[in-house]
Image 1 (cartoon, rainbow, N blue to C red):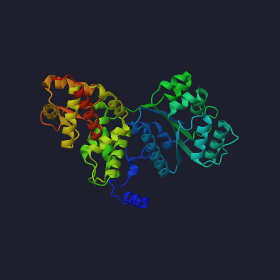
Image 2 (image 1 turned 90 degrees about the vertical axis):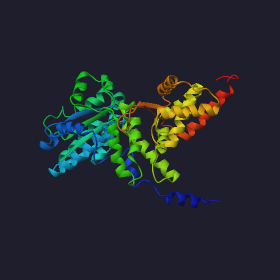
Image 3 (image 1 turned 120 degrees about the vertical axis):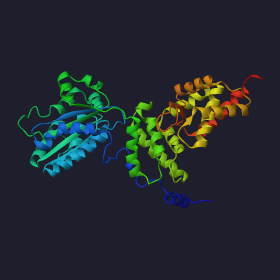
Image 4 (image 1 turned 45 degrees about the vertical axis):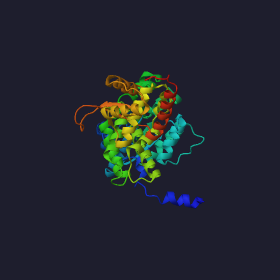
Length: 414
């Protein structure tokens, strides 16, 4: 009987594909940000006054974009580099990052700013205004400046309300002659929440808006390649694995353009490889990863029982070809040939090419498969079919449904 110690040692001593897994964690701040150079340039233009004329103005800007488009990473990288640059100019500048989903009231936000700057201000018994005044005095006395990022700012607006936002953005209105030591950077998914604010407060926030578009497939590939090189041992993750993830998530390929989901898929694929004792991360490991990060997987499982018999047979054919090739995509011609073989095995009359093509389109519309026209790297034009679910689990479900459909058919039916 295997002891608990044996189990632990077998896991701990197992060879891993990872050399630095932390690089793939959400909180990791990368050294560089592929395809966010333009946003960094705009931030530099807005906040350069903190280096060239510190204290002359309190700046505000808003980063706007959906989930996983690099807003938080860009803010953190910018804050880190701005602080380093300030020090080279003899300026003590702190970067503060507050998540307003966690710190959602004005009191909690101000208390977190105080805590991160390290000011000896009591966090109990004082109002937000009193805490902020004590903080400003501390910063003046110690010649400190700060760039404060309020992440999930749209959540803060909806919870804390107009007065709290007004207090933040008009901080120096009552003290026009003091040095403006605090500047703010706001991050939001969209601007709709700002409609709750009065026009004056809203205009203060919207003076500088920097938009973040969802990532395209090529951009995600570059991001994944940079993370791969830091996180994995050389030779354990091929480019085709990265391209597969990038194509699944790229906004130009029908995905959400979410870098966070793409990086998480790479992490989970690596963990799947480790669990199996594999020395390489494969496309099948990625499929297993997508089964965890994609909500669509559950929906696909619910859709399968409603597929027609020949749709199931074509799906099985695609599974067979993809398993045999161990590649991310299969040509429709290969799938159709396999489909005809499967029909022969089951004693079913295969449908003609035009009908097969229609079934493939139906499966694509229902989100069961991915289908696209081949591009660069493929000879001739053909429809390429891919599946992001783990093939073994999907095959078992499909086989079971085919058997049920065949058992329920009238005798002699084709």
